[in-house]
Length: 166
Image 1: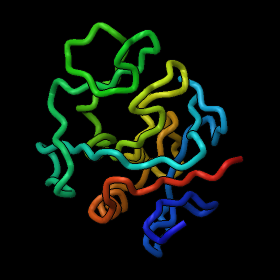
Image 2 (image 1 turned 90 degrees about the vertical axis):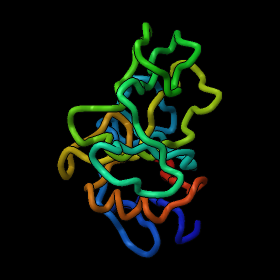
Image 3 (image 1 turned 45 degrees about the vertical axis):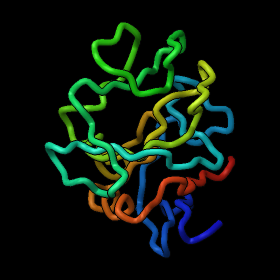
Image 4 (image 1 turned 90 degrees about the horizontal axis):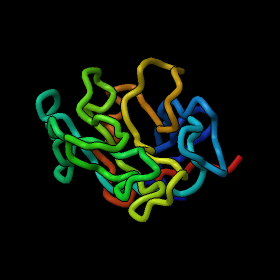
């Protein structure tokens, strides 16, 4: 591990000498992640992208891409584009990336079950803003807004998110 890794500890995520409180999945940590279990998968995950709402925030890092009104994320295990960003309209089950709430105003994409997604092993393991302290996610890692923005301004593509095995 290096100081530039995002490492989950009992107190939160450690990054660049700081520890940030965070929320994880309502299903806790899992060594055997499955679609819909609400768990945060353990292991070493790389940050492979960053998305942001240009109508709400400034570009947090030069490599961040804007979230458009038609951007969705497929979570349908029968879809050939499972666990990938897809455009609306879309016939398969999906999650809208441009939400009315602020949770996805800034999203760090991980390589969990991506790019060669295995159906049923879980989709959309993101790093995003939390609803409130201690409120669990559907499997993602979530931070307070200002902490997420601080992290986003300092990470690089390939930064590791390390979730220790249980």
